[in-house]
Length: 403
Image (cartoon, rainbow, N blue to C red; front, side, top):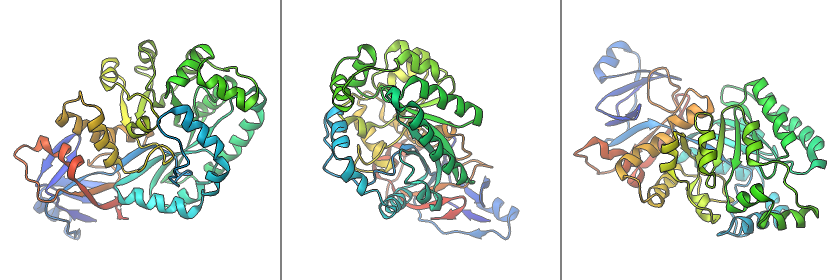
């Protein structure tokens, strides 16, 4: 048992001041230091910096670990140009997938304050590295199978990867499933994966309507994806529509991006799914930003995520929050700052089905300490915004242990 006494605590969306926290693998109690000493007389008192904020560790719900080698071989500014660069350079890019690089990336993620990741595992090359990392993870085994001739063989290969991840399951490693996107997964495969997810009670994730090119293709088999598929396969036919895709997703799904969903689709999504927003990735790939005011209008929860280093320069959630502050210029800064912290902690934790994401009793002890330097506040409501702008993560705990 340990006791810490930060100046501020971000708990249940509010800033608490001058209270202490007793914790083991879970948070035991929040109260005054003297009360906690009386209740837990043998607890170790841990020293932390004077002007510290204690809050839940960040939950990055959508990240690609296998492509952790950021490289100038990616073309930025346009989605199809970027996708073509990924395909053209795949042999070289895949050579950079190494345990060493992925371990370094996970260590940087932890140091920056992220204690839980939702990892999209495309090839299964990251599973052992993830297993051996102290970070908490939900591993979304991803399938791509856009063509009829790929349906059976690609699904069987995917099942073998999923089985391997199931063998690695423990208290910090949770298997899950992912449909790459409606433009790259045949409707027959999508139905099989969704049925399996329902049978095994797995979380599911899917990229969805990320680009105008995807919108044009799914609506009318036209646009830049027509040329993309003609080059790749010598034919260009979609094998699912947006309506078919969402009819298949009859369980809660983390929809990634969703920038080009229309109002009719947003209405269908409301109450059924949520959206993971990656503003840096959207900007680098030439896509429009997610309309957060529409998310509020349709009652759709949204969460923040970095995506991977093929479409980002960092996997630092505070950096992602900072960029979001400046991209969404129509949002009130102070309330948006608080919402960004919630979109990076409690909301994605709930989406992943994990007992983390807050500083509250009986929540697992995944938390961080942020140094606020010499900042002083005349109003506690200002703290979330200034945490994003100036805060420095200096301690990270997972399951009550400092990393």
